[in-house]
Length: 129
Image (tube, rainbow, N blue to C red; front, side, top):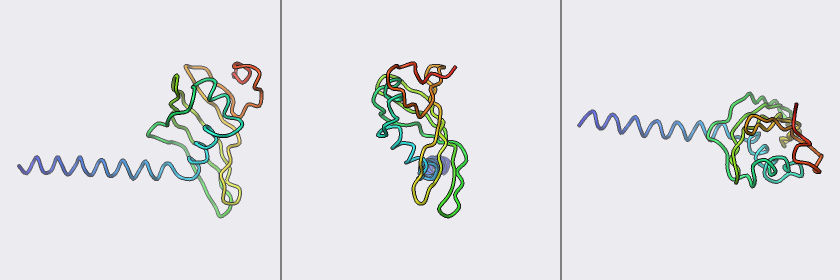
């Protein structure tokens, strides 16, 4: 009975820890990246390659540094679309109180696509060689 209680306590502690780590890792820079991928004028590459962006992976990795009204971040995470999934690495800068995506790469099935990409005339226009 004591072993069962200990196992239950470990499972509960693990679930709480995972929730806390996920919440911390998905801070303002991540939220700006999510908005960029879902709503920005430059999100066309993600939509063309993945379909409608449906969700994101559990883990977000990469350094984020903030100092007052400035900062920078380079974060990576999985992106799940309507058709298929990919992995994105984005560079962001903090200007005032807002995080802004400056550039990045979307990797889908081994192919890399430049973000942002202003060329909307072709699916492969943003393909990196």
